[in-house]
Structures are given as structure tokens and as C-alpha cells.
Image (cartoon, rainbow, N blue to C red; front, side):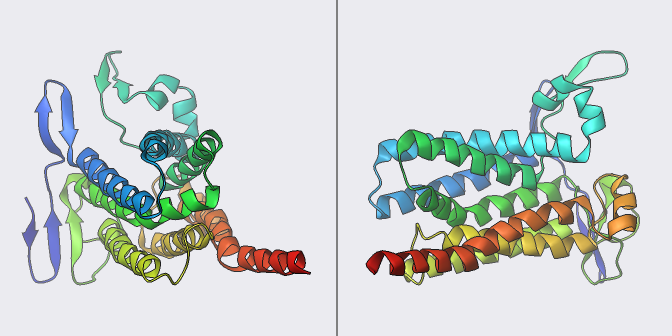
Length: 289
């Protein structure tokens, strides 16, 4: 249960919605499903508005789902705990874990990294456009418009799991994550990220609906990468590191793994916001000469 006093929130929600035998349906999984379904509905609407055939839309969800899930899982395993998972490859691929007695147990995919999910999605979309002959920038822009919805609900899932927590704070509204053994409040970094993404989505939708920027220009793809990962870079400053070895990284270079991995995505986003339009404009002028 959650309790509220004048200064902070005691956060101790159930992580499971229900259980069937050893298989538990967790709130985290439900949040993922909600986020993906909202993105699915949004992109379907965009495809219809742009006159793209249904037979080209239907496979898109499969490509996206596989790309995000595989990329997010491999991203967490290889970027945050490679030593363990490379020596336990079955646990990297399947949602199970062996206990000290050698028995396997269903655990669900408890480790998923947003950077890996983003990279996996981009790779999956590359295969998709090659197969269905659609402009890569049109597909990326359409997916980008819906991306904040999925990102928001994933972070709400992290909140329900009491994971990816913030640093200790005396800030009004700090959360005490009881399941982590905390007795002091922390920044609710997951909630802050989720709310930011919910605000970002209507901004992108308004830009699209009012025709300020066209789909297929690369604008929405660049905009969402820049806005999400710039925010991610700065909010990492109030988060606890996800793995202990990141502490030495912070001491050496002043950045944790999440910040370091955000930089390439910000650069890609800025390329499509600033450099790509200029190159395209220059190319168009040269063709007219």
C-alpha cells in the first residue's frame, strides 16, 4: 500500500496483478502492453491518414515488438551486466533463472534497457522497409510520433517495480521505496520521466496535425531522439546508478552508463533536425540548376 504524509510518499505497491501457478502477471508487463497498444493504435491512425495500405501496416507491429523486446533485453544484459549474462546465455534469452539448487524458475524479463530497445527498434525498421518498400524516414517519423506513449508507460512500470530509483532527497513529494528496504525518500525519477514523455506526445501530435512539419522529412525522428535522450542525460543526474561498477565510471569521466549511451542518440537526433534538412535543401537547389 502507499501512504502519504506532508513531505513524502511511502511507496509499496504490489508488483503482481495476479498469478497462475509459478507464472505471475506483473504490473510492469501490463504497462508495457498498454504502451505498445497505444503506439499501435496511433501508428495505425497515421498510416490510414497517409493512405498507406493495411497490408503494409499489419507486419509493422510484429517487427517493432520483436525489435524493441530483443534490443532492450540484449541491451541490458550486454551493456549493464555482461559478465553474468555471457556466462548464463540461457537467462539472457529466456525469462528464467536457475537458483542455488539448480532448479529453473520463471522470472519474467526483469532487465530491459531503453537504449538497447531504441537500437533494436531502428534495426527492425530497417528490415521492415527493405521488405515492404516504404520510405525509411516516413516509417521512422510515424513511429517517433507514437514513441513517447510507450516510453511513458514503461517508466510507470518501473515505478510499480520500485526500480530505476532516484537519489536520496528532502524534496517535497519524494518516494520511500519500501520494497528496496529504504527508510528515506528518493526522487521519483521514473514518474518524472513518464510524465515528461506524456507531455511530449501531444506536442508532437500538434506539430503533425497542424502540418508544421511533414512526415517523411526526418523531423519527428530527430525531434523525439533529441528530446528523449537530452532529458534522459540530465535526469540521470538525480538517479542512482543501476549497476555498482558505474560508480567508478562516474568518478573517472563524470558520466554514468545511461548518460554515455544517450550521447550518440542525441547526435543522431540533432543530425536529422539540423544537418539533414540543410543537405536536402542544398541538394534540391543543385538539381534545379
